[in-house]
Amino acid sequence: MMKFDHLALPVSSLDRSRDWYIAALGLKVEFEIPARHAVALQDGEGFAIFLEERAGVAPNGIALWFRVDDVDKTFAEWTARGVAFALPPQKNFWGYGPELVDPDGYIVRLWDERTMKEK
Image (cartoon, rainbow, N blue to C red):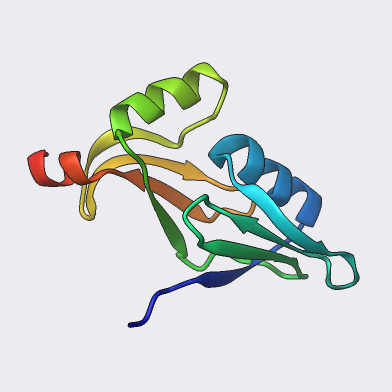
């Protein structure tokens, strides 16, 4: 068996990105490495994103997909708590869901299994 478990994502400001991923997506700090200007954020299912502060960060078309229980419900709840979406839930080339953009321009997409099949 093989399972994708960790991803390193370069960011221009560790504090700003850490705060955004926690506030917008609800990720939790697993641990921090101050000497490396890095933090590991976990999604609740065991996947961790390592944010590492680096110079010259460019999004280069990188997109992250997060599965949620219900795309439309999540969009409504997150919008009500002030999360800014770049696009509302809609049919896209990859399926159905909304898009956010993190502080460095990385695209974050939400999807769920039901709407992937229905829409």
